[in-house]
Image 1 (cartoon, one colour):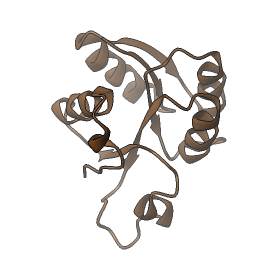
Image 2: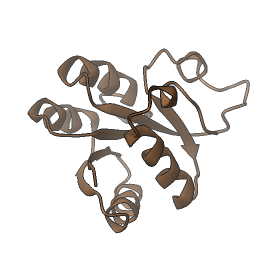
Image 3: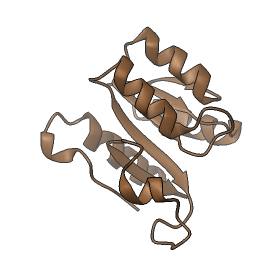
Image 4: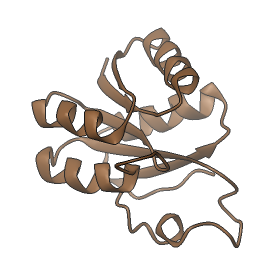
Length: 133
């Protein structure tokens, strides 16, 4: 299947994502923060990076911007907590300013995660810049 990097600062969430993705046949590498994730991206070889947006230190938005420069062919799925329709939702999520290919709002079911991963790994160009609440 695919080689996926998951960047998530909450270890239980990182483990859950790893289990779901490996169960679907993907090779998964995990990083507990944005800086570690960027080091791994620089090494290359990832088809997809799944990153939390709100992390201490280097945010997911910063990871995506720098990661795209290092690995332009890699796809990026941002995951973020909160209601995507809330007026208190940060502007960067509302405007696509952070540059992810797709956004998946927490909490989500494993089927939603696997659907987003499949969409991003499909080479059809119509799948970019979509959003799933």
